[in-house]
Amino acid sequence: MAGRFDLPEPDAFTRTYWDAAAEGRLLIRRCRACGRAHHYPREFCPHCWSEDVVWEPASGRATLYTWSAVHRNDLPPFAERTPYVAAVVDLAEGPRMMTEVVGAGELSAGAELEVAFREGIPVFRVVPGAVGG
Image (tube, rainbow, N blue to C red; front, side, top):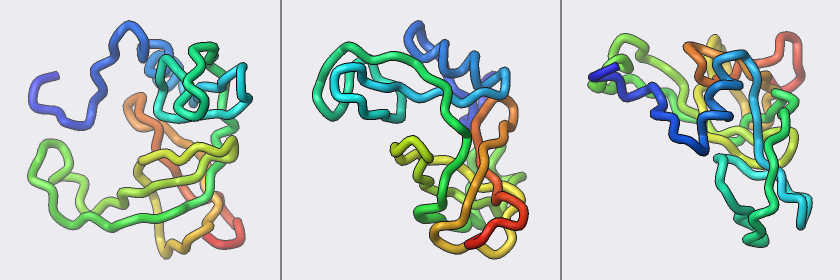
């Protein structure tokens, strides 16, 4: 869709990731050579450079590493969403991921989060009743 800066442009490699996200599933890549998970999806392991990497489902659990409340963004459709919370989260599987925290009230580092999806894009929300949220 022209004029949207928030929608991905899948290619042959990332289509698997975006198709899963459209179905409400978060995938990560895991290296079979060193065993480490990574995100964003790559065709090789950023830790040991092996090309023996596979897709695997992520748990959808994360902790909040850092965040910033964005009050102004003139690019469509962000202007209509302000204020929103841009964040970096630590996935339970280990990798860090840039995302958005939705439905957030008061946030704190280490808050427990769970994945949600908006228009096929993974975002996170605070786990209700969780310590640190």
